[in-house]
Length: 215
Image 1 (cartoon, rainbow, N blue to C red):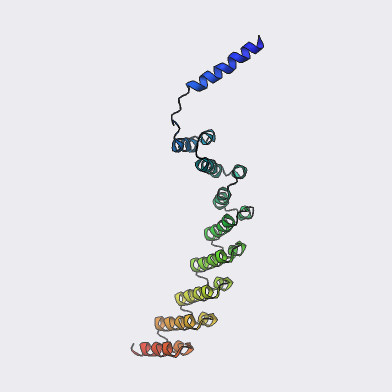
Image 2: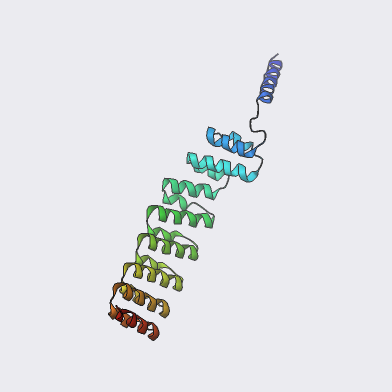
């Protein structure tokens, strides 16, 4: 008797399920939207595309700030976004994917206006880019000196020196042309001919003096 009742119960559930209208009719975008609006991962599971299905779960995890849910789909993007939203730097260090690891730290540096965070980036090029960006954002020449690539470091120093009209920083530029241009522009902007004397390239030094003599 119990088996009959159980059988009837199961059949009733299956019958009821078959009667429920699927408003999405197999449309992945529709399932995605329903999952977001109802905060229900059940609709994510109905998505046919593996990429969209993973994105659906990731967005739900981000909305819930659920790191375990991110781990369940192995999504570094998901973890990085939660770290940025919560402004928790320690979460960035848990990301194994090097791209998202660096992206997370870079975004945190920008969001918190902390140039020191750039030191956590693994790739040299990405770290250099981070320091250059933060030097510009914070208008701090000292951050340029952490850049490994010489040309990029010189350009970073030059841009900050010119912006701040600080010819003393031009001295730390290694490439002669960039250093001479740094002195030249500051001399012209400030109207101080004495700065022209620091220019090593004779042609640029002469042009600097001639330009200022006109004023």
